[in-house]
Length: 262
Ligand code: CO8
Image (cartoon, rainbow, N blue to C red):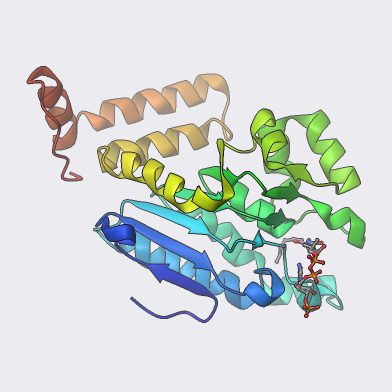
């Protein structure tokens, strides 16, 4: 596996052949999301996407921070034209291209772009001391990588307005209550607990997992009627996989299924 400057990639995480861990790695600046870090992250994700062994990816940071936002030093003097020419949002747009599940394991701060990055993953497991915020308003700007859209979809207009207009922190438990976070676990066991969840998903039929992810995401892109239709077609599609036959046969034969990803 290629070595990156700004992210650490561990394949066969905890000796599980189908799970990879990606760790954001700029701890001195609380994993501030520089352009280079985002490029490394996307390249690492593409390598894992193309790797047949990998079925689930865990994205994490460090104890103090998942990521404290976009790199403010890098943005401070930028003009809109710099931002267009730099095309730094190209990397962010690519986050929607990955078909394998990506779980965000969040300890510490997930702020601004850090919160947006966690929300761009498929779901978030948070350590009990994690803190989330869209604090851009405090530095004279607004979220730019999906915060106003994804946070609003996750927790509703009223709570999103409160968070985005004040920039105030949201605790892990509040984030869980409002639907931003799927589960809160003790901070010390965050990776162990996330790994246990990843293991369950990695043992499911990979094609069905991908089609289910796609169908859930469609809920945000379509009317209920179109989304239901999309789901039904993906449901039919699973019946062309050997794994669907294996899963149902194994159930009838009262044994564990052996999924091959085809
Ligand atoms: N960018 C650059 N450096 C940062 C950032 C950041 N976002 N956050 C922290 N750092 C650096 C600090 O400057 C400091 O560096 P140094 O040691 O060299 O002085 C180091 O990390 C440690 O930080 P603090 O000393 O501030 O640590 P504290 O524990 O006192 O405070 C906080 C922690 C509360 C997290 C504080 O650092 C903070 O408020 N950080 C900024 C949070 C923020 O405003 N984030 C939003 C940024 S804007 C954004 O994300 C917009 C996204 C738009 C889309 C992306 C397009 C590319």
